[in-house]
Length: 536
Ligand code: B12
Ligand code: SF4
Image (cartoon, rainbow, N blue to C red; front, top):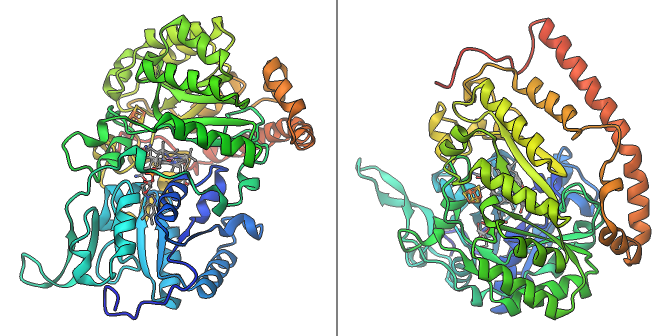
């Protein structure tokens, strides 16, 4: 018997089916959260499959009916014992809807994990929810414990790191039915992790040449992790809370845990030799936080003889020595992505990111000196942001001259300090957080500038949207050598030719959107009209 007396299915062919949210289609990033989970479970003898509705039958997120039909067919056919879903705050409604449909046709015990369930389990666990068990934080150890259990109510009480609903538990008000939040489990020893289960997804699709993994550079690329955890608590980011949500100790999620280097190299060899990947992107929250680790990684990578070029996201304070940038460059690192965020010392202080404008100066100067491409992530709509702060950001960009710039509009995601600076966000409005521009009631900036107009002006000014594709002219010889000697060279050439046509078309579309928007504003129906400081 399952959690609420349902007969558990046999699960002859599959113990756990993991369903990728169709929203993931928008990002050509591998679902690493499932790959690690599956890799670990397979290592322990469980049969796992990953269902990716979207690309297998060429579906888009909008083809919801077809998506669901495909998933339901898979569920019926494979008849798994457990079914897992993953959810960010933004795809809350999509995943909930999916789970409701699955629940109608399957007796499987349903699990929900990832960022939002780790932060707010009660969004997913309530009387009548299609989710039986919420797995908080890192999932490997907890999922194994669930799969090993009988799956009935009694056994759930003994599994650390989960939340679930018990219809018979008496609440403080004397009524029946309550959410049970078991104690945290504690974090996994990185040595225990298996290899990501790449064989369960369509690697051809994820690693097809595109410019979204190594940002703005056409690459057949894979994302990798070489550490877990983040010691910072930037006010706009929920990372620390996610890592921390299953920790046994006060500061557990704050410790950066490194994957053993031989496992990292094995992982990279699989990507290069089995999946013909040309580039990898180190996606760690804080790559470079521990200088000896940079040396260890570079030395091990060089010794391995692997030839992929790579890129990493890091913090500006981590890049302060010439010899580090030189070493990174010498081992095939072609681009560093930095969260520069703002050029205003006041804003940076308020963000609690522990970075300064001077850190950005130094890091970018060093990168320029050693021919390292740079990507600067900038944000607008920061709390308390004034027009002067925006001007300071522009001044900084002109000073540091990044190769590429990405602009984001700050959103108050649950799990962040900023979430508490806006009026309470209802579950039904979670999807609004996926919009480029937050509703006016969630405005964080103090100025009343039109956010969309500001962003558009910047996109044009810094040539983020332009009629030319800049990277073709500045990509560098190591990049081009990789492209022309790659097994994928014909795909690259096709993609590059295609994308040479892309910018003019995208530019015209962008200009047309701006024109339509300005027309709307003159007739008073503008969507994001700045009003009085509604969020204050
Ligand atoms: C890399 C990353 C991305 C990548 C890749 C995402 C992807 N599809 O994998 C990209 C750039 C595409 C991305 C996009 C977005 N991201 Co993001 N992203 C991250 C980041 C930095 C790391 C996530 C990661 O891969 N961790 C490593 C893996 C191993 O850990 P994990 O994902 O937590 O998975 C483990 C557990 O959660 C658990 N688990 C996860 N799923 C499941 C499912 C089951 C059934 C079980 C049992 C367990 C389980 O087990 C896993 C293994 O231990 C996090 C910050 C962070 N450190 O958490 C933000 C973060 C998750 N992203 C966030 C957001 C908001 C977004 C966007 C909405 C931003 C936007 N508007 O564009 C989009 C939405 C993407 C989508 N719907 O797919 C927020 C989420 C906040 C929230 N409350 O939900 C975070 C926390 C950052 C932040 N700003 O606060 N993101
Ligand atoms: S923004 Fe980066 S440094 Fe700050 S909390 Fe998030 S992952 Fe950590």
